[in-house]
Image (cartoon, rainbow, N blue to C red):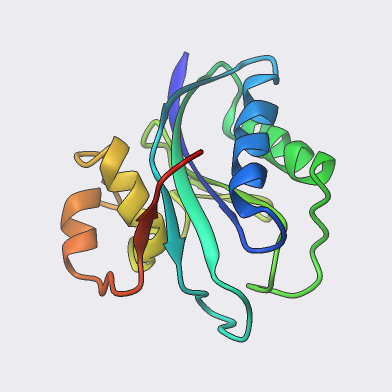
Length: 160
């Protein structure tokens, strides 16, 4: 089994329920076992800021899927939960990103690993630092990358 890390987020509808549904959908997929889940964090929108706030989190998974098959599984779960891609960085009912896959480097038309923006986004690094603070992405630990970013507006949200 290979260790990978995923980012999850939602800013439409019942955001917490959508994150829970995404986790359940991933756990139901053959070849994926969720081993860690961060708290959920309320975060301001990034990129396209004319939209509602997000609820974001991070997952650690063990998988026997290769990186592209893991991406496909994430996309399948998104589609099953009603994800429609309308505009870049726009509102979404669910978003599941492959952030890191056992330190692998992939760069093709479908997948870039590690995720190209992971070290620039506090809303990704805050939950990731909770479950994998020493994970090295792009030659830098999650904790070190997060120390360089503004975390304002990112607040933990109790589950349940």
